[in-house]
Image (tube, rainbow, N blue to C red; front, top):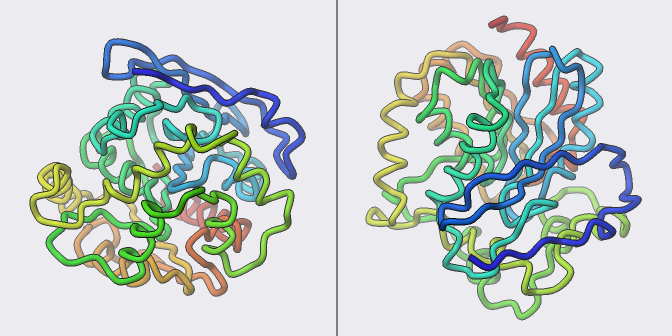
Amino acid sequence: MQVLRTPDERFDDLEGFPFAPHYTEIADQDGGTLRVHHLDEGPADGEVVLLLHGEPSWCYLYRKMIPVLSAAGLRSIAPDLVGFGRSDKPAAREDYTYARHVEWMRSLLFDELDLRGITLVCQDWGGLVGLRLVAEHPDRFARVVAANTFLPVGNTPPGEAFLNWRRFSQEVETFPTGFIINGGCTTDLAPDVIAAYDAPFPDETYKEGARQFPTLVPATPDDPASDANRAAWKVLERFDRPFLTAFGDSDPITGGSDAPLQARIPGAAGQPHTTIVGGGHFIQEDRGEELAAVVVDFVGANPA
């Protein structure tokens, strides 16, 4: 596996991002290793809040939430998925599979960091990976907050908004990361924030993971990941630990996906599910502090 590594200087002096990097070596599932990045903020003995980003962002997305969580005595762990942020980036599209993304995060979070009593906060692909981890290792998790995410098995056709996005992601000559994230927000991002989302990708060769993600979402019943996601749902349909949905009201990609999570997961019963007004797909940008407050209240109301 050929691996690219974004130069550190690309991450110097990013707007609103004073956090120290942490790096861990994990197996790449191809006989080599990958260096994976995460943030570790807040009190070391605080309850762990695992912040999982999605496509095509990185842990910079959680910069508005981390100070709120830290002030509440919670420990934030925010990884960069392989292919994103400060994590290593395999150079070939075929190096990226749904199963590998799940295994790469499992290796980091459980084999290396040995996290337990986790409150998962997941958005976009953070949920497609994170909810698989919950299903495969339920005893590691104390609570879940799902924000603008879902766990598809391919039984229903994806909506037009997703199909348009997938087509764009494959056909556009230059994959405009910051522009994409700005387009998924209800607020206009400042130029230095857009630049921070572009920072992990010096050129197009670094973007194979971002290009591949839309094609890995199960969209047909025989998708390579469909059976594993069906198996995950069988576990989630018995998962009775506290489960909250906190979706934005302005996300055309995942709008309505909170309903099956609420209906099918026992731990969602009786929880104060919320729709955050003014939240686009990247709700952490639009309403990050508000979402963080929802997480703090949820942890406080559901002691482990």
